[in-house]
Length: 190
Image (cartoon, rainbow, N blue to C red; front, top):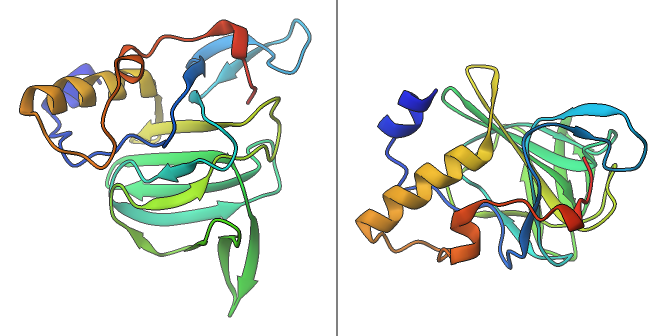
């Protein structure tokens, strides 16, 4: 996986959250975010931002799923070649028209359809508190060839390459975003 991260051109990639505040829960095993002493696998990175902050698509791809009936809350899954990226706990709900599902956030002006092509950096939702969560954040999950990948490693590779190339992006990196350290005092769940 490290070779995949190092060999990838990350310049087109976009940081997934506007109004970034902190990384609140990292990838891997942890105690339950909603209480108790249960160890559970956390298959993503929790990124805190004020409720209603826009979520951006990390990498160009096709929406393969929209949902709103599980611990992930209102969510979108996008496939980009071998990569699959999941965005959980967003505002809005899932509706159906013409036998197709779509996620709609009327207040945020977002409507995303299954099968829709989404460029990198496009707004795809807003940070919410749907599903199993204790505070507003985006749970961002990544898989490569159907295997979980630590999103912090991807962000670090992205940041390093974009910084070196001095790429102008839609979301400028801050020192706090590039460090990918977990603020354990703000564990928001899922």
